[in-house]
Image (tube, rainbow, N blue to C red):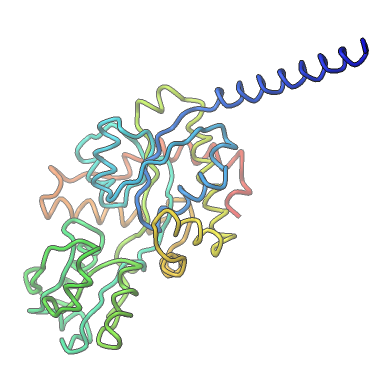
Length: 330
């Protein structure tokens, strides 16, 4: 009986030690409020959380859904979230306005996720034919910039097109109803609208030649200052999450569809046009500057800026993570 009691005490002691160790490990994780936009381009964020990748790097993540890049900027600036992602255009706006957060990586690329969808009965077969047509487009976005560049390349003045302000969610119905002749939008709305039009709509062209899609992973200055040794881990976790999406697109689509509350097929449509590569390449650098020039010309930022000057933190952490985890880029 004495030996039995000793065995029970030993087992309870070991269980207690393991419980305390588990509790301590949970407490050691750094808490993060992660604002994630309800768009497939940010799939690596949500998928990484659900697959335990951010936890693996020492983060206890609370996901806060956000609707737009503007909302992400506001939430980051107000301290409502610690991390988020912003499209190229919304990040340039943040830089131009001196908002207190920095970019540390790309979360996705893919300008061809943007495009121009037209009504067949509008007789639009080239960018030149957009003259005098009503085009639904969200102001200050990559599709708006791409549309602007198309018009200029076609030799038409900027006001040759009648821009109708819209959002990504309502422009499809505007095109279907005939209140506009074309829409400058993004996936999956382009494909879904084309399907609903049952042969009466056609993609005029994709905008990847003109603008970069996806965007940048943003961290508040306050969080980075409080957790200086964890910034590189945050980026490494994102890179591994992106790699997981690249290698497991169907599974990733199912996980992201749960977040977006849509069918996995719809997410797969977007995945077709997106690349979950974290590095800034020459085209992205060019697109950042072109976007800054466009936003300044449209008076959507207070003054012209040089985006390259805002990438110091990103370049530093990219070099660090590449050296430590080179296989994450495979």
